[in-house]
Image (cartoon, rainbow, N blue to C red):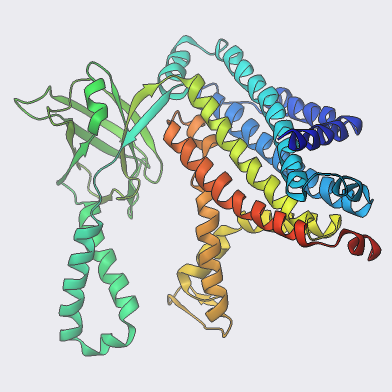
Length: 461
């Protein structure tokens, strides 16, 4: 451990000697202070928070990520190219200790930068909050600067799949020609079955039963928040639709009626409901009454969600920074693993290419959904085919699975909307991102560095 820390200290000295630490610190602080001044918010608590958290934390993660990749590639590759690592490798220091020492050095550097910039964002957030109107400050403290858990309706996947298979069998028995394209027919039937659970015709109502689980015991006398989104194929004259809600069960809980509300489609709406509407089983029962002339559709995935307070903002914010730190740990491992084999320019190009691929998952996801990289006809719903699909599509699926292991943790979005980032989320992020993916790159980089002929590499420069 002493040798690892010695290498980490040398990494710090190199960063300070080249004034890299000061440059990155200045850029981060300039981002935190200047960006909120340049971009004006709409005066609301949500708009104010979106600027201070979404933009500043997003840029902080971007700057730290790029500098981490650049440093990780440069510190090891240049040591090999300039014959500095040979002097260390001849001493009683194992190559894995050199690799780990550089990783520790870069991560402690990242930790210091993240603490400085993260603390600045938090202090600026608290200071700017005092300048909002009293009503907006109340919203900020109750809905944004808070740690809120969420509960959704149970999954209907099992029922949907069973009904889909039942209708599919009946369909192919009645129309044998449909056997030619079973995949497309199954998809169409599934969407029809799913629509029956989502649509609310005019004059009808749609009930929900949402189990809040163990959290219900702590929510007595605590208000809840409903987050809802719906779609409509028809347009109203005003651009909005009336919404009537009824919460609670007669003789079991208190009753509450909300509405009429004027809500726009295709966007999220959030409103507060009174406490003590949950029954003894921890279930919140409520219904939407459609008094409009148009059919409305509530998506099963994100159409309805109940939010409730779990804790304060500070620890939630710290856990969010912890997940960003996990991202940096993975990028650091990728950069060092690349530099273990490649020269500095090639290692930097390779690492940045991996980062670019991870940001292009939309295109990759479309190819996987369509099942081909050939031309796709959106009007007919058909696509071409390519011999490369046999290799490329499985590679895209594996890439999506790996990238989603990292992207499923979204601390910036969670913090800006007041969502809880639990210790369990942080633990899973550490296990998946740092130990799983980062550990894989670390093991590969250490094995490559151990087997690499340093003198030969220098002679080929």
